[in-house]
Length: 177
Image 1 (cartoon, rainbow, N blue to C red):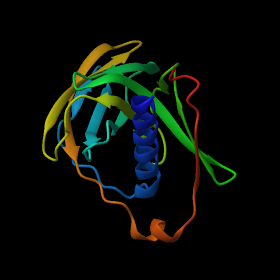
Image 2: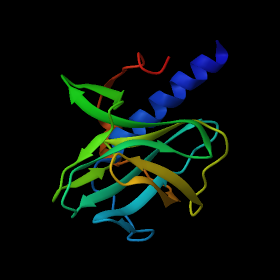
Image 3: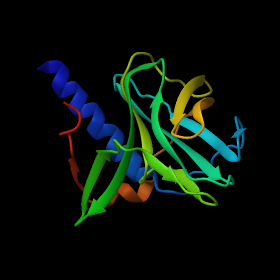
């Protein structure tokens, strides 16, 4: 019971941080990977703040190839469960849900995973993720197969203007059990 409460509180904490950062966070141009016309750039993971057991990851994927592809799943060595998520605001309620079918990356399109939108969730993180650390994460694509990308851990600060706003948060946990 105590672990369930800690897990729920950790998920709520990362969800609040994910929304509060906004989309102005700049990404570094390191660790870029290009495979068959697919460019994966700006991979980063949010630094953990003990005792929280969750983190989020972000990147950009540009498909300059001639065929569509789909990011099916992700896997890391530092967390027990890794998921692709989306976050939306509906009637002033934040809703974060897994994307079990992954993310389509159409030919000629770019997909950005960022705070407040689509992102990776790392659940039950087994070690502290400190700023500057590098962690390999495997992305599985429908057409291009497995691609391992080095993600840099970065500390992301909350925006001050969020401090005064009231937010109601709802997380869809039905897919987490």
